[in-house]
Image (tube, rainbow, N blue to C red; front, side):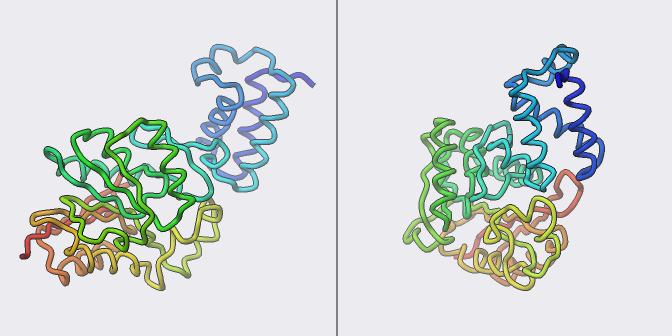
Length: 282
């Protein structure tokens, strides 16, 4: 049976409203159809009464069913927009989220001149590539313990043609002997291992190793902070994304390690999300 663009959108919206709030269902229905037809939102509005090609109706229905089974939209599409960049995303990587843009903005405010930047646990390369594209004078090293994730990051680096980013297979600092940096950034795993959210929503589909970190969620953050002084230049900064309820604990870890000028920034939802500190000790 033939369907118009508008009818297809309405049907998908009604189905997706079983999974997400109505406002999100409407947006997701549009995003999935734009992907199938290769058009933008303005085209959908202008061609609402056009008949859908029969194969597109079937393809669209298939994507909607995948979403109804809980698969994240970013994995269905194979990409996600982050800080103005279109990034390839696969199930081997964490899906870049708007809250992480807070970390990128904080980093860019500290970069002046040809600084050396390290991104720990780069995943898709989102943070490293966003910094490199907006601070072309910087030299960015991005590491990840997952070789599959690094392949995704390399795909993104290549497509964005960013020559000031180098990728390295490393579990945190292990492959960085003798290297020091002016700025270290990371969005490490920080969810408690027993957190029920790990078995809900999009998180069910994302790599657990990129999400959970021990009983209190701070295992990786502890290691990153404790070892950071050996890889920071005098006056360098360490910036970490963390859980909404972890700011005080992270501040204490910085203080114990001897960092100064400790500050926590809030994300788009007004949650304490990024804590940064400066290394001044000899």
